[in-house]
Length: 206
Image 1: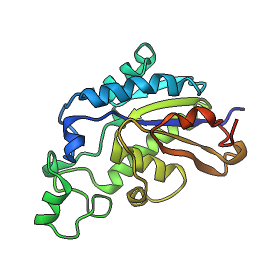
Image 2: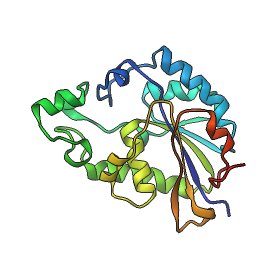
Image 3: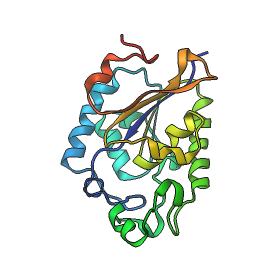
Image 4: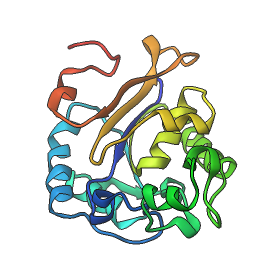
C-alpha cells in the first residue's frame, strides 16, 4: 500500500502578506509577484505524482492553485482556510506587540479568533482525511495554518508550528521515513526554488 504524502503549498504573495498584515477572512488577491511565483509552481509540481488537489476557499489560495495549472483538479476544503485572527485581522505583528508585549500567535491566540485547540483539531481533520487516501495530495493553504499542519504531521503540539516558517509560494513535502507510516517526517520544508525538482519523494537525491 502506498503511504500518503502531502505536498503543502502556501499561496503566493498578496499586498497584505507583503506588508505583514494578518490575513484570514479578508479576501486579498495575489499581487503581480504572487501571480508570477504561482506560475512557476506549475513546473516545480510536475516532479511529483499528484493524485488529488485540495485548496482553501480563500481567493489567494484558489488563484495560486489556478496559476499553478491545477484548476481542473481542484477541490475546495473549508478546513484549509487560514487561522481566524479575530480582532487582529489586518494588523501586523509589531502593531499587536505594541499593545500586547510578548504576544505570540501560537501560544496566546487572538481575541475573538480561533483557539489553539480549534486550529489543532482542524489540522488533524485534514491530516486524517489525507491519511486515509494513501495518495500524494497537493494542498494549497496558508502560512500559519500550514505551519500547524507541519507540526501535527510529525506528532508535535500545534504550538510548535511557531518553529516552522513558511514563505509565500513555497512547497513542503510531508511524508514518512522509508515509507514507514510509524515515522512521519518533513521530507522537504519551505522550498521556494527549483531545487525541489532534484529531490525524490523518499527525500533522497534522484
